[in-house]
Amino acid sequence: MKITNIMLSNRLGGIGQAYLDYNEALLELGHTVQGICHYDGGWREATEQQMLRYPRLSMLNVKEKGGPKVLPSLLKIRFAVSKFSPDIIVIHNYVRVGMLATVGIAPQVSITHMFKCKHFEKLNGVIALTDELSTLCEVRGISKDRIRIIPNMINGPFYEPSLRSEQPVVKIGGLGRLDKEKGFSDLIDAMAELVHKGLSVRLLLGGKGFEEESLMLQVQKLGLDKHVEFLGFVSDKQAFFEKIDLFVIPSTEEPFGIVAIEAMKFGIPTVATAVGGLKTIFTDGANALFAEPANPHSLAIAIERLIADPRLAHDLAYQASLDVQANYRLPVVSKRLESALLKWADATAT
Image (cartoon, rainbow, N blue to C red; front, side, top):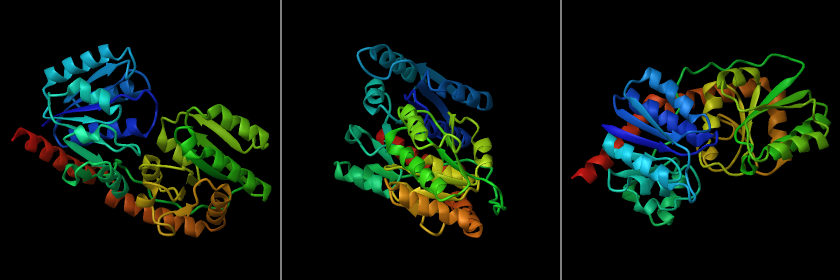
């Protein structure tokens, strides 16, 4: 099957990672993939790296994804996709742009990367990352027979969790776009509470975003300069997770949470807020500890509990490692993705 995979974000984040994972998953199954991504944001370079490993992957880049200057991008995409002649088109974000650029060429499907599904009723198929997002689509008028629940995925190798030894400073990790809904302001407030209690903790915060300057100012005001380090964009996930003892996801909303399955892959015990896809990925007390969203005190309590009980932290990470391999491993999820895409392509062809 020939598949066009479109992702137009110029910002580093989970949607772009999902685009790369779709490329790899479909290529590993023997399909031919046309990757279309924004010129900026690192996705062009990442796709080029995939092309070195997969001769069946081609790439197109565009520089505009909306606004009055988008017309050249639309025409460029349409010409390239028409020439490629795919069996199906996957559109990750900027759905209306992707639809307009490729209308009439092949069946179009998209993914619920956010808590909204505008224009999804015009698609041939919808991939909902969780049951919650599937229900949202149905409420918005999308027929159930056009929805398939398929989570995001992650490739190995997978790492064995280790029991944390006694050490002078416990390193806590946070990773993601530094935007308001990611809740990093709450995590910094939680750090202030832990430091005030006398705990030897350090936060390694990776990512870039609109809230970066205000978060840095918050750290200064709270006197946490020696306890919080801003790492910028993290390209080497393994190196990041090897540096930390605990991982915290403080989001106030989270459609799925690729960082969650990344922490599980690397065997890192996790505290997460009980929101969105995190409630699907984690079970409180089984493979992670939950905290209340937008509640720094709740985050601090959960973090302190894992610091005080290394055995609990290890056991949660061990179960999380088993769960991520059973439910989110790329070879497992990719077969479900392939089945859905084949069905939508065949239904439209007949």
